[in-house]
Image (tube, rainbow, N blue to C red; front, side, top):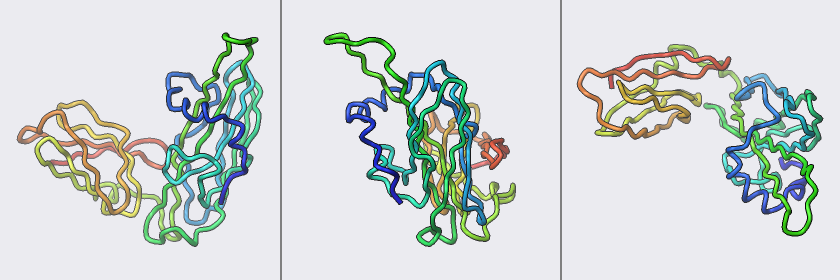
Length: 236
């Protein structure tokens, strides 16, 4: 279902420049890093706070994994309400996500969508001619996981089903479970590799800086629904 056609609020220049705005600090912050629709949920919500000292224009929509999508081009069963709003300094707002239908979603594994929260500050400086200033928007993206009917949260025994194999400087992670697994891997004495996500019933190849030596173990931390992590150790 498409969001309201408010993409014209942001110029094409903003859309091109948003990927360069990572160095900016978010004024509007979110109280979590992911949203999970359990098998019986139709609505989820999260809280936003404007911790800056200026008003912010916010636009929110969901996509199916295409980071370059716009509200007009994206179509998912997750509807965001309200799609566009203004936040004053110090203001708290609640954002609601509604699951319009499960009919097109897999019944044997989780589905993944992404929530986009665009924030654009006002240009408070007077501009004229050559002194015009471009205000870069900042986009936050959060995972939105939807579990099919009958699928509960993963337990420790489920997370321990992840399989690790080595092939030279490459670590292969196989996920035979129906859940998306978000994890950080500590390959022996090497630097940890974070921000990994292995799709249900799929695999992921992780490059290493060097092969593991004989006897070295791989420790991996799996992010739970609560935002904490559980750690495990394996010998690949």
